Amino acid sequence: MQIDLRELKQITVLYVEDDNVIRAQTLSVFEKIFKKVYVGKDGKQGVNLFYNHKDELDVIVTDLNMPKMSGLELAEEVHKVSKYIPVIFTTAYTDEEFLIKAISLNIDSYVTKPLKIKELTTTILESVKKYKESRNLYKTTKALANEMLSTKKDYDELKDSCDLLEREVSFYKFLAEHFISSIRLDKFGIIEEVSNQFTNIYKYSIMDLKNKPINAISGNAANIQKKMLESLKRKEAVGFNEKFITADNEELEFHNILYPLYENKDEYASGYIIYQSLER
Image 1: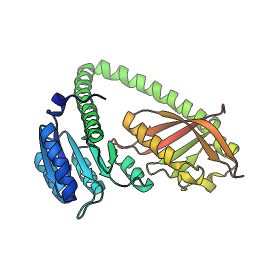
Image 2: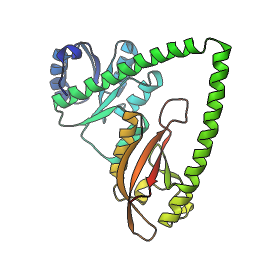
Image 3: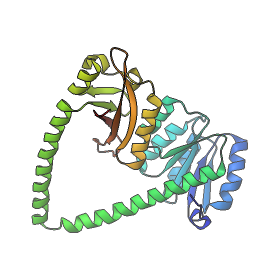
């Protein structure tokens, strides 16, 4: 991605980092390329800066491990007020527990240390572009929806269409539950349900797998977690090939389609469902 310095000069950043050397080095670059930079030395200071300047901010860049309040805790506080502002982690860690927690918080991205300024700047620019596009799209669709639903007739017609769609969805849901191999995961990657077809193929009972982590049946859980994060960033299903382990310890490889589930009113992913193609 080619970086346009004029676009960077329109971005206001909140940067939080407890390491004095890293903070000073990164800040010296940020202040030259961004419109404005607010800087905090720990998570609590970062939260205070966010509350004081939230109407100006376009993106938050924060370290993961900090005293007083971690980057994850900072992100949780931010999302109580602003669910969509991009939050980018800088971290020396790539452990699975962090990735799963970050996914559940809809973290936009992360960059590993030692920081590469071009990579970090590109990530910031991409995240801000998506954020502003989503915000503009929301305003536009809200205005159009208010216009479309301005009369009782429009509302009734839309309701009838939704009722029909709901019946169709229920029918396809029945087919999926009984004739398609699928796994339902919670937002942390824990197995909640498996379909009848999945138990037939892999020879497990439902109770064998319920409340087990996905790595209980996959030797490559890290790839599945990456696909979970990818589906959230793209806000759509992602496809991938992966091997799963049967109760007889045999590996079966299928093409999988992973869908993020948004069943709560808070707009965060509540879980995921993986459908498997039976064409191997």
